[in-house]
Image (cartoon, rainbow over all chains, first blue to last red; front, side):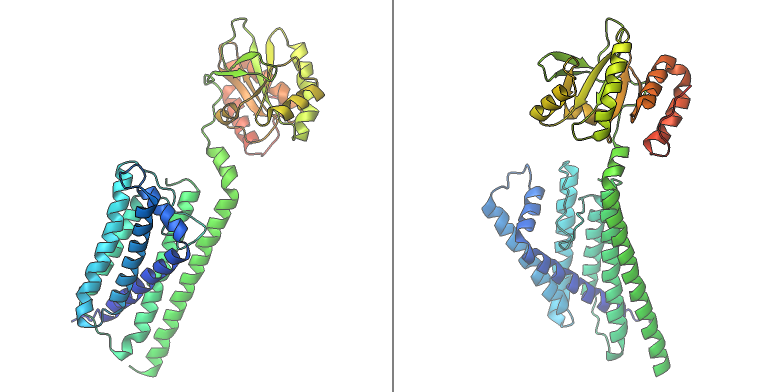
Length: 182
Length: 211
């Protein structure tokens, strides 16, 4: 039987780091986060600074809890817990983005750029990215207990996944700058 | 797993991650270049009006208060020369005497309108300094945007029927003459003209007389 422990473990490490980075990025600039949330809620009945501040705190907390759950997913109860939380979180993002695209609300900054200079416009590529992330998060449910010898592969593959994510982000943001994608 | 294999795999991981970092760096650099080139690209991309198309009509009020219908057909059968200028454009200032001379020489066939955008007080001073009081001088950002004006001085010639006959960056009398020439020649030279205009717009060659 093929042992897929290494890639599974790497996905967990990468997702946990990705979510933690998201939490740090959100905490560092709560104003920008509130701005992004407001743009997602434009022209909806959900308005008001109080509500937006609550949502900002809730999303940040949800990401932090998910990151911790995925990081702890080596221990049995958290395996399914982390997978469900992660998949739900990313599918929620995908759904919110799809809803906003469908109703024609153009959002210039998706609020997912880790404080980078380049803003990513919400579009179908970002929805697809969140669905893929949700699938990766769902894979956390598969029990994986890497042996001590796997550490190099786990670290290497996790780093590679994060790098590919960052490169994709960068190239996607470039397409927005050149007006190829709106 | 023996040590030799471990070293080989470690090297491969290091290589892969190193390459990933390099690709990320290149992608980031490409982004920086895109941002630097952004405005120029945007100007090229702007949906400017093309020669042969009907100009939209702009009902505007000139600096001296008179009503000007820029881009409209002229019942007296005269063409319009819209000269896009700016007080802070040295080439514009040096071209103004030429435009005024052409306006006098061709007054039976051509009416001249100066166009710009910005603070009316600054433009009023500029117009009176340069002796442009007899010409309509309009301030309209929409007008400039519609024609996709990126660099000044820029001239657009619209014929009596309200159709754009020629347009381009004008740096001297010859450039301006070439636009008038294109207007006189009409549709016969339009392909040649468009080809030349593409070169002029990309900055490859200065506008030359088109015959």
